[in-house]
Amino acid sequence: MIEAIANEAHAFIQQHWEEYTAEQHEVWKILFNRRMSQLKDAGSRVFCEGIERIGLSENHVPNLDDVNGRLQPRTGWNAVPVSGFLEAKLFFKCLAERRFPTTVIIRRMDQLDYLPEPDIFHDVFGHVPLHSDPVFADFLQEFGAVAAASVTENEVKLLTRLFWFTVEFGLIEENGKPRAYGSGLISSAADCANALGAKCVRLPFTLESVFNQDFEVSDLQNVLFIVRSFDQLFEAAERVKRLLLNGDLRTPADKAATKIVLGCCTNEGGHSH
Image 1 (cartoon, rainbow, N blue to C red):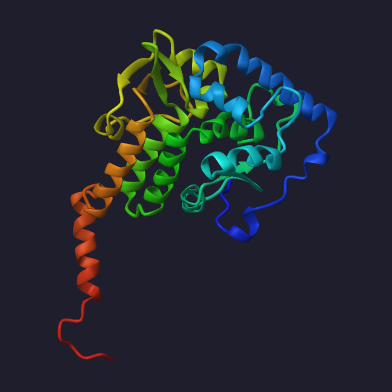
Image 2 (image 1 turned 90 degrees about the vertical axis):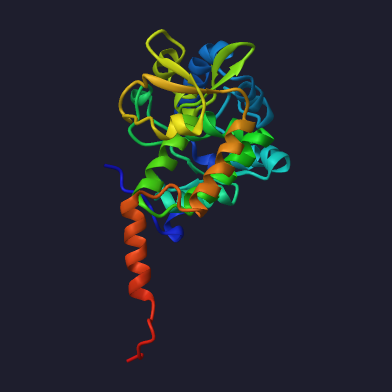
């Protein structure tokens, strides 16, 4: 189990791009070319255009200063170097501030096919190209703000499902066909092939459907959701914000517990001691 970082003082670091070795740049090149060979057909137009917009290439591990120099003027987003996996609340706080936490390590040559923790290939290649799209960028910020406000176990569960089936494993319809935009599909050949293959059930995206769909992190996904455009994602995040504010994502037990807590905290005309 990877321990999450909750303390901001320990989370944010410098990239030190000049310290990457020739072998590490070669690892990036192999991974980049492997994925682009599939994603030219399977990847969404927004992803493929985003690769060019933020200046990613096969030639070297990305320098985040260069990436941000292209990204920040377009959408206000920055990729910020972190020392590891962030605790959920801190991660969501970063998203709400248009800061995407990015690990700067890169896997070894003998780990090309699998790495249990995130690395710069998953974080930058898999996620950051979409942050150059204004509508997706607005959605991700709004999602971060909404998710940071979630409190109960049920609220967190539902927000996690929304993140999983969009940011991580989302599909978008382009020219009548499903295309990958979620980072889990972008960075994994097996997951991407499965998502577009015969064994995966692809359903139209609705908030209700996503909220009702459980998932297993370690399995190939057998149900995924297709959006018509990223406007649907932003609208969904706005709707979730209203549902949260109204307490509509809380279970009856959550609501009862809240009433008990509020009752305990209310001074019903008694005296302070």
